[in-house]
Each structure stands twice: as C-alpha cells, then as structure tokens.
Amino acid sequence: MLCGRTTRRVCSGSNVTKAKWRYKKNARSVSTTDSLAEKLTEEFAINLKRHLEENRYTNADKAFKLILEKLDADTRVDALQYFRGIHAVTEAFTDVPGANKHENQRILAALNDILSQAHSECSTASEPVKIAVTGACGNIGYALIFRIASGQLLGPNIPVQLHLHDVPAAEQALLGISMELEDCAFPLLRGVKTFTNPESAFEDVDYALLAGSKPRGKSMERKDLLRGNATIFLEQGKALNKSAKKSVKILVVGNPANTNCLVLKSNAPNIPSKNFTCMTRLDHNRALYQIAKKAQVNIHDIQNMAVWGNHSSTQYPNINHVLINGTPATEVIKDPDWAVKEFIPTIQQRGASIILARGASSAASAASAIIDHMRSWVYGTRGEWTSMGVISNGEYGVTPGICYSYPVVASGGQYEIVKDLQIDPFSAECLEKTHKELLEERDAIADLLS
Ligand code: LMR
View 1: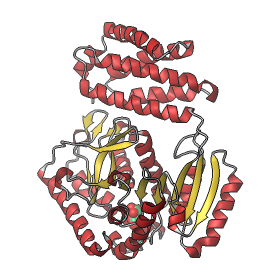
View 2 (view 1 turned 180 degrees about the vertical axis):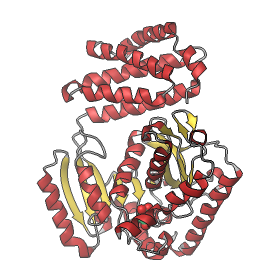
View 3 (view 1 turned 30 degrees about the vertical axis):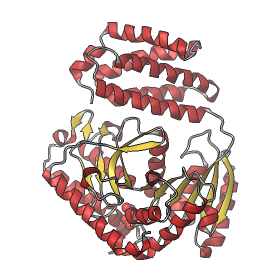
View 4 (view 1 turned 180 degrees about the horizontal axis):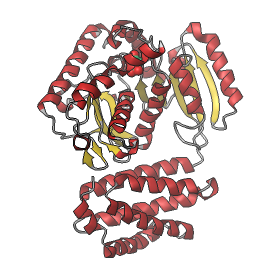
C-alpha cells in the first residue's frame, strides 16, 4: 500500500501543479485537445491527489469507474481521451522525487489496464470473438452462456460467436439452449453453433472454457473423478491442438481441474504452455468473502489474497500477505487462531459444503468465477493479485510442468506469477502438501500424458 509519509510528500500542492503542467505538455503529444477530456483530467488530478492523500489505492480505481459510468455511449470517446490524460498525469507523478515508485508502478499498471479495457470497450469491433464452452448443457454452462452472450465477459461492444459443445446425448438440449439464446435477442451475439465433436467445436476459437466433465457427488474427493474425466481432456487436448487458434486462451473448470489441465496441455503441444490455466478463482472469491465478513469490510478493501496449489481440499488459501485497506489482515483480524482453525478449512471444504447443502455442485458461483478469471486475464488485474492455476516453471520449488495455483497479476492479456514472496514454515508445509498431491495425481494418469 501507499506509504503515508511518502504519499504526502508526493502530493504536496506544488507537485500536483507540476504534474498537471507536465500532463498538459504530454497531453499535446497524445493529441488531447477536447475540452471535456481536459476538464475530466483536471478532475482526475484532484481525485488522484485526494486518493494519494487518503492512502487508498482503490479510490483512484473507483474514481475512474464513476466518471466513466457518468458518460453515455456517445461521449465514450472523450472518456478515452480522459484515460490517456490520467495516464499522462500518473506518469508525471512517478518522476516526482521521493515518490513511492512501487506504488506508482502499481497505479500505472492499473491505468494501463483501464486504458486498454476502455479501448476495447469503445472500439466497434466487427469480427466476433469465438468462444467455445464445453459442458454447455450442464449447470455451469447454463449459468455461463447467457452472461457471455449479454456482454458480461468481454464488455458491451465486443460481438461474440458461441461454439457450444456437449456430449451426443445432450444434442436436443443444445438445440433448446440455442433457441433460448435466439429468444434473448442479444445485440452482441453474432451466431451460435452447437457441436458434439470437440475438434469442430474448437475450430478457430479465441477462448476455450472447459466446464464439461462428470461432477463429484457427496462424500467424493475431486480426485475420485481423475481417470474418467482425464480421458475427456486427453481428447479435447488433441482437438484444441488441431483446430483452435494458437493464441487460444484456455480455462479448465472440470475437476480435478489442475490435473485435467495438465492432461490437456500435454496433448496440445502446438499451443504455448502459458495459454493453459485452471480455475482457482472460485476459491479466491470464496476467500475474499470470508475475509470481508470476518473483518467487516467490503471486498474491494482487500488486496493480495493468494490461493496456492491444487483446487482440492489440500489447497492453501494464504492470508499472510493480505492487506485490508493497507493494513495486514493479520493485524486487522484480531483472532490469531481464525486463519488455521476456521478460514483455511472453510475454503478447502466449501465445494463439498455446497454439494451437501444443494445436492449438486456449485454452478452459478463457478460461472461467475469463470467470468472473473477470464476478464482478469484479458483485461488485466490493475496491479491487484488474483489466483490462477498455471503451468509451473518451477516457481516456489514446484515441479516444472504441473498445473499449480499461484498468486498472479495480469496486464495486456498476459499473467505473471507474483515473485519473491516470503514463505513462512507453516506456509511452506502447506505448499508442499498440495504439491505432493498434484504429483500423485500426475503419476496416476501418467499414461495419458504424451
Ligand atoms: C467447487 O469448488 O465448488 C467445484 O469444484 C465443485 C466441487 O466438486 O467441489
């Protein structure tokens, strides 16, 4: 978080004036001549000053959103100018002597993401983005597809084409869903194709959201699904390799998600490893909620949550790095036993608790986490951490090649694992336990890896 003393120095009136002056200089080079944009940029400088003074990183983010929301569609282009202005002002701030460089970089990363998102949302793309969803007729698929078609995944200006896949027995249900999609008259939906063959379903797709697999029932662990579901991902890996775009961004949701992702990647050698991810965002979101409830704060007040390892009951939701409005969560939550006795087991067992309560596994929350995961990857995390299962390159002592959940930041369509975190002995044990389980899962399906 912003350091109070440094922050006040950065924000002294004369520095703001200097920054504004520099903005005006920079503005010419980004051709910001529009008066609304100038006015908004002035407003922004004031907001930024207030934000820095209040020592609350999230305020700047909220201020952008509020002002953007005020603009109607016709003035969105002005908003883009405005965002360029924000960027220029913030760049100017990073040069101010005594500025907290780390925090300014974080703000810059956030601004870059906002700028590129505003760009995508303001541009009128004509070619639809092709999105494959497997398990389209399942509960997660049903909760997901309509959100994508309405623009909640890629924003209100990006047309999409859906490639819906399910097993042959679901052919009629696929037809029914595509009829319902037609009946929604979604302006962004530029076509729905249905498939029971993965190779055709993945043809030329930009995103592949793999929710199709057998769900677990009561008293099962996710790894009990290993063999049955891994064969699905073997076939889908080969299909992706053959027919998807090489740049396809892939999210595995079907359980056991990490090892299914490993099988998928291993059978799709033409697609770069960094394009394969599995979902631990649901665990991450669950963790955010539990922390917010315990500390009596809003979700937006929480930063630096991290879920490590396997999306299973060995996962390690770690609050050691979490900040609540800039203060370590461990100081805000004055209950030293809470993390180990309540928080960690609650998150580890949340999927099972939902199955017990609902008689079926999570669906709407999983669909929501899919949207969050993909939006973070595509539009960036604005300097924030999120959790993603990614193919490890050995970070934090993990065996290279397995799919392990790490804290990541994303920007410009790429994610990066957060590096150089201090790992205390308890955390090291937890990281190793979940690592060991992933190695056992890998060994159990070694014959499916190529
Ligand atoms: C979840 O975490 O809710 C899902 O992975 C479903 C499950 O089996 O727990």
